[in-house]
Length: 274
Image (cartoon, rainbow, N blue to C red):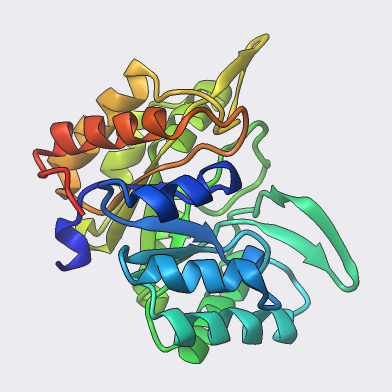
């Protein structure tokens, strides 16, 4: 089954691994954080077993494509080795940076949308795609503050990256909603400003919490009604794409994630089966 017609998938998280291996629940694909599988071991063997049943998507969190001092070659080689070994249907990373020189932070820090940052980010995407031999998807971040003096807004920056490098876009609808609330933007305008519908290759859906006047992207709750509505608008504008349910904190029983995936399939009118 081609990726474009897959039922919704879910992130593979440690509390559910044994149950998924034993029961093989009906879900379109499994997405893993690439860095969790560096170094081999039992975790890698389990992923090989799951690969026999499910398509895999690799979602990186630590390559730091927006860093100003060049990509970490060892990190890049390890990602490339995993891609070669498992042949994932999708490979993605974030519109962010998280390292410079020998210092790394456990967070996805924002990239200023400037001409210089666009050039650096595009060069790194080119290097990444050339090494792994397939398209990379770039995910929009959740935002809490905005830079001054920018050359582009976020949709324009992402659109130019896709145009220059041939990368795809991973639209995280929850991140769009959270950022729009926090920065006073209209999430529907964000979708309309993306230039090339064909560049959109995947959707992420997740939950957030409210803290005072801010929304915090926690991936620790069900998808809210407003984000489901934004998903409907994305489906109408861009069409069906592989859709992932993300849940990284306060992880619930597996049935809850499967229920969210089934809900996404229902809205996209996709049969929910492996």
